[in-house]
Length: 78
Image (cartoon, rainbow, N blue to C red):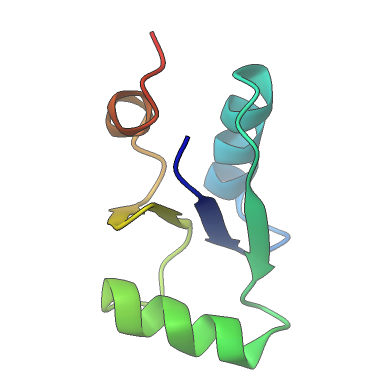
């Protein structure tokens, strides 16, 4: 399975939904809190071109927002 990184904030409902989705499907992920980690925030902006969260990296792919269908495809979840 490719490495999964989620750039999120503590108060983002879509971030929480994405993390719940990962947990339901046994997907291990690394979380970067961009509200408190300036370096992670800069990296997220560089990769996605925006400030909105969540931004999810799956291998070389970047998904902006909680796009459940795209995440399922990229993670081979049925």
